[in-house]
Image (cartoon, rainbow, N blue to C red; front, side, top):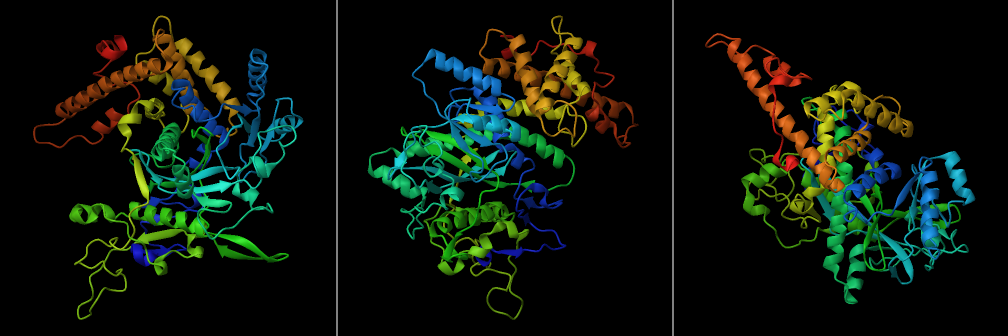
Length: 598
């Protein structure tokens, strides 16, 4: 595979810089100062069950209809009393409602610690409160069944860039099946994990698990085979894919605000550092009515293309999995193709060669071996420039893949078409209105003050209020201080990480919602928030313009004709927390944006 892509791999690292660094677990596996890293700072934390639930909940508050693909959730132990009260209230209003809930430990993976309950009074739930935080969700009781079995879908999503946002979805995925025929939850079958939980790591231990040489049979199949089967029954496959793409884009939009905070903390603007990309595993369930439901997001989806087979008691061997190889090899290969730093240069010089072409199949001899796809063992991958043959020698050099000579400037001509489909910014116009929290995160980051910080101090919050002109006779700066203290104290009490004091982004969002509701009382919440964001951005743009004018005036007045600009004049004006001397509060009067005042 390396030869076909024109890359050279260094599994044990090397001293010289490389183009792409492939970390096994997180961004912090190694200290990298250049190139591209296959992990985003903070992604592992952001897709934990509690953090993901909080991020989606913010979006559900703003856009409830757009984010109804995520089950109603409660965070334990913080919201246990709220959970009990809300369940009791619904039952009192509808005695026929007999829900089932699924409890998922926050740090759990591969189905560890997950179980079902029928009522908050379940004794195991009390044990969860004493042991570790968890999320409890409404259980989807009517999933789509194939061969009477429940299944989920693992889709691979490439987050190629955070700013600007760029998202790709693999055209095929995996369908993981339960190994016991499905029945709706009852007190008798709640503990039947092979019936209710689709986790591969659990069902692999079932005596009914089927390893198949076909991609359309067995306990793990390609998603495309499921779609073909549904299509044969008259299902609108385009509609199913459209709904899934929408779910993925909306979920990433919910995650990006806090990811930006992590990113600026580890890679501050203006300092040298790598760029990031990441492959995510989205676990999705199709309901009986074909509506997709988000189960969870995995920051480190397994890329193994083999499974263990027991030859005799206690003796195992690794056996290739054709289904995994079919999907995962293409995802890794095409991620490297998309992230190739030389690709953009080639596309600019030879645009006609990179037009869409018919699908070509990669020779079996060039496909990645199972050992190469265990990417946790790979630390560095480097794209190699295609060198000309040495004088006096015929054919490509040892460092040049066949077909990559000057007569054929496209080294990917022999590869299949890209399996990763861009969905954002391709569909940005349809989803940009949802990025309100993203704009709030930009405001939050602007006022952090200290580079690398992830929490807003009281001075930064006061400066935000003052610069955006949000204080008034009904909201004094003393009231602003009280608001900051109350919200920050409550959020810090719910956060396990107490290394930094101050207001986290989610606390800032809560404060922002409060301010928006005070200022624009007669509007729906998302319009209130949008109006306040517009107002803040308007006042800050005026401030930036005045600072720019003042900076120019200072430079013009501080040097003789023909002399150079005084060092640091512009920088000091841009970094000031308050306003430059020539831009005092009394001199800055404006009517605000038209939308906010209409």
